[in-house]
Length: 331
View 1 (cartoon, rainbow, N blue to C red):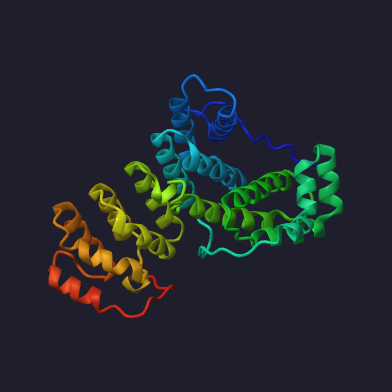
View 2 (cartoon, rainbow, N blue to C red):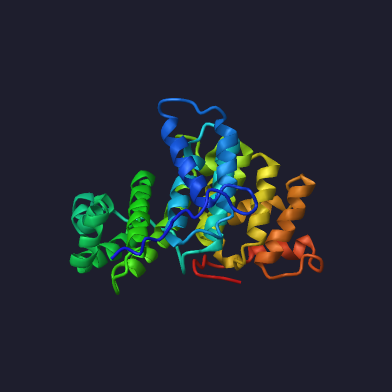
């Protein structure tokens, strides 16, 4: 039977700000409205709602996954650079508060026709009315469990498909979470929601050179936020993505921000991808004082050196002497 959990307890928090779930609903309405009409204050509304989502203490794992899917859509496609940047910052906050365990970014081929068959019970659950949902949860438990495990294994390269799968995990997880039956697919759906949240976020933030999105966005604010999101989700593979873009990134503010993220990433130096090692070494003598200072600090942190007690020559020598890339290393 249904537990009748109240998903939105109140439209307002004690602070007077929008509740995260109310903000999420508003963002979805705004995204849908963009196709046919322009809201009165699209930027102000989006920023207010994203700010409410960033304070995500009131969200359960499935609501958080739903929020990640919506925030990533805004980060990738909103016409306002301020909203795109704030959306990526919000996604980083959501994931930093509840990271997927041992997540590593990768893409795998997806047999979409075969996957539809594996997810048949979950799709039926997501589309059913309340009475139908209870029936499916009671009668198709093994199918739901199998589908949830299959969902957790998906790593599509296409962002649109990944977002759809994330929304399925969120929708079905919330339904299962309200059900009083013992066992069921809830745990497997939570695993899928957490993993797909990280996957969708990484896909959204990495560079799309053709469209100028994510790490390749034309504006500094969005590139900074996308870089931070990549490091939050998977710092090791973030160095792969940053290595592709660093040589063509002339804005020192962006490079300083990325260096700050690397300095706080807790990576070991050998975990930095070789495509990024050269550009980082060059930053030690870039000619920009702020970039050079942060390059010294970041490389010292990655090398586990004290930047105050190590001069640039020592840091450069240790950095250039690094061996093979270790894709598992942590400091």
